[in-house]
Image (cartoon, rainbow, N blue to C red; front, side, top):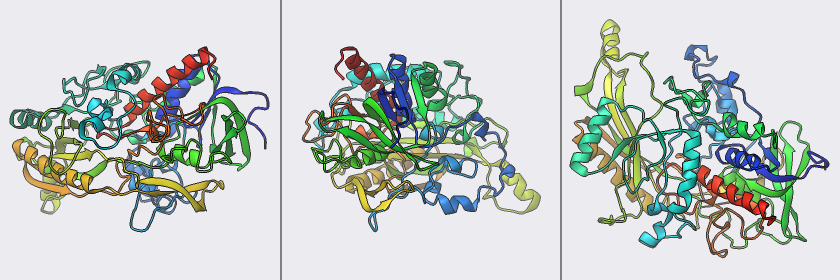
Length: 560
């Protein structure tokens, strides 16, 4: 079995080049460590970006039969379309299974940068309402650190990435280091003011990883809109053109693309990882890379799949799994509830040439706070994302010129969609399917997850509360939805290799090091102890910087 380099032993092997992998590679290589950054997909060029391509240039007008054939799961994601579908995994080559009647949609990209190329970019800090939730309501486990411990690393990430937003002074959603906020529309301002007056709740502009002024060599957003198709000005944060670029610039980091890692290689005599084995995605040849430390940043389920597939004579149930917790406590935000309506008083003639703000509003959690009443039907809480503004009224009545005039006259819509906390439960888990392998012969996952009674009650409450707030804002024709979408639809899957101080209940310690194997780390969403209700990527990046800096200090002390 050939090695990628016959003589090179890297200080660190980072698996995955997305939000967390890019940060690990940047932080470690800038500290002087030799890093191998492995990515299962190919590299990407800005020449592929299509955010300015008109729809009429698409061969199939976004109805490509290739998408239906090769991406039946991936097309459930709003961002997977004819413009960019080849960034997403081929579902035929990358299968997974679910039990009958328990669907789970797993959205994945295999390309340098991963999901940072198409993510929603909403970037919110967690607070001790989240990190110490178990102490508040008695459910589950606390995180092994507090907000105070992570706050300096939030600062580092925000200062580098560039997060536009507004400070609100709300304890449930800590303020950060913000670039100037994007402007709210008239309807959003009206909602904000009336919700504050009547309910004492906070509506703010979305805190988003999109630049509102030139920052760190990247240009401010020009409001073209479809960020999921790329950004030639690099105005939104994606790792290939930021963290990965910086890592490669040091000369200390080697990027190895098309490297589908199958497992971690162990030196059982020393109980240490000695590197990884990967299969070349194109040639199907097998290679090994050797390193003093292995850091998994492949995405929550993929990193756990690697640990489960790295079982040995000593670790028969998967690497780092002496607690038995590996694979368990899978979480994904509960979504599907909310309300939509119109505000006729704000309607004006609509133009397709107006700027398209790739951001919305955020309504901060107001249920089950540290102070105040606790809801009788559910624990934890939810926040809302939404927006308000003009759009064409394609549902207008009439024919010919009358219909065209009605379409252009438009309608002023407003909506709120809830994102609720998903409780960590043992019976939501992933494991290796003994009968299923991917195109490279690597055993695939079987994923079992359902949302429970707590999530259902939360979504019912969120639907009613959304309708009440829209009504207070002067909206009419209010339509509510209170369903709970199938797990995976939030694309915020976390857990399965959670952190904790007790090795009998967790997989990782407070610095993302596996309790069982001291030179294996996991810093992506797999490490989450509880899901909170905020989008997870900003926190994952801050956790990675914290773990990376701690690891650098250990290298300096020769403790690795």
